[in-house]
Image (cartoon, rainbow, N blue to C red; front, side, top):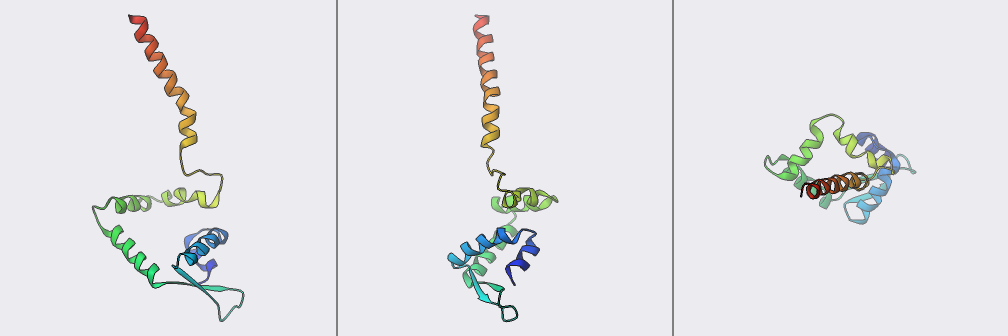
Length: 124
């Protein structure tokens, strides 16, 4: 299977997978070899180590009471959750954390706390 074939199956851009393929190859999970049909294309093959990790992941997801399995299954229960979760791969402006939102709301929380303390002191 070529990189563009994998991208079509996963519904992501080829450029997104390119850097991932380099990292997988570096970690010994993927092997690239030239395609006999098209000299420009590279065929991707999983190593035995990658297949073993895939089997372990499949076993985890099939376990009913495993917390990781519950989280993974939650991602696929409702249409659109996985696409929303992986949107950061296509758009580099999306942050994986909610730190910016929490910082924006910190003032509201502190304002409420100060107001509550002022009311308590005013009652005394």
